[in-house]
Structure formats: C-alpha cells, structure tokens
Length: 234
Image (cartoon, rainbow, N blue to C red; front, side):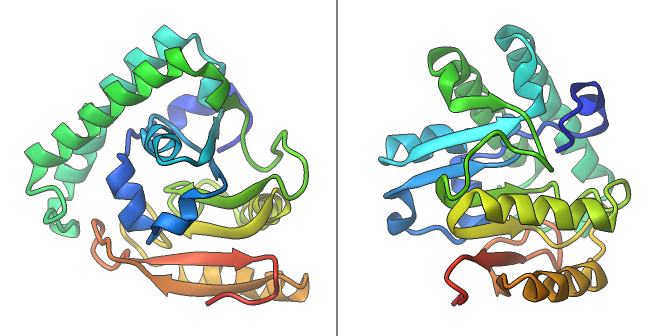
C-alpha cells in the first residue's frame, strides 16, 4: 500500500483469516519455521496465527500509524463493507470456502477481533509503513506475502508502482515472495501486466513463476506470483 496514510480510505482494510492465508499462499508447516512479513497486513489475523505456530511474524501497513483503538474499530467496521462489496457482484465469487456470505462475514469478524486483541497485546508486530519503500534491511525475511494489493488495485496503481513494489519486496526477502491474487477487484485477470513484470524481473536477474493455489474466492483468481532469491522457483 502507498506509504501515505492520507490515502488509507481509498483501500479496503480487510481482516482475512489465518486459514485464508494458508489456502491463498499454499502454505505448509515448513513455511512457519522462519521470519515472515505480511505486506500490507491490514486487519488480518495471519500474524497472530503464524506467531502461534513458531514463526517470527511481522505485518506492515500505513494504517498501523493510527491509534490502536481507532484502527481496531475501523477494521471491525470494514468487515461489513468487504462482504457487501462481494455480495454486490456475488456471481463473480465462489462462496464454498466460507459456506456462503454469512460465513464469509463471520470469518472476517472473528479475524478482525483477533487482530484487534493482538494489536494491543503485541504492537511490535505491526509496523507502520508501506510500499514501495519498506523500513527493513535487505534479506530480512524468509518469506514475504503480499495479499490483495498489487494487481487488485491495478486501476489506481500503475505499472511502475508494481515494478518498484515487487523489487522492494524481493529486496527484503531471503526466500520467496508470494503475491496473490493476479486479478483486480472486478475479477479481471491481469495477464498482460503480470507477463510484462515477469520479463522485467527476469532482466533484473529475478526468477518468477505462476503457481496455482487451493483457494478461489474470485472466480478465476487461483494463481499467485512467486519470486525467489536463489534463481529458481518450483
């Protein structure tokens, strides 16, 4: 997300759950043995779940510059806006993961409450800031995750922003960078943008691949972009 906190209202601050992240990013037990960055973290409870499984997990988001109580209230309120957005175009979504719209809202509300509690209990896990400039040293994280920001907001984040953001995510990673989904908010595939960025990443010596994941809420949105440091991705 942009580092400018004045633009927070332009983006939905979602409270995705730990289980959603596991499915979206095809995570396995080994992924929780090192340091993980969630960028942007929003109101997700992923950092809590990852920490509980032994990971050194951090989240970064410009929204974390807000007072904790204000942000917690906003994230909880945003769960209704997120479900309403999905319901407005319900034919574009597969609700099986949640059992329906009511289940979707329940998952997000539970996640928001978990996030709000952890934000107060462990504020050091939540770093104010955002792409394309992150306040971390090179190779700080074994795994970097980017959910529903790049490509999702392709209508307002241009190609140059995407390239700068991917390069920055790669800079702070020692292992993989995983970006999901590769569709915009309306469910339109961003194949052209993804392909062009992959070419430029390759020119910079960064290997990347598209990987299908076991999660598809937006119909057709079941792929992630994976970047690696060792020159190879599986």
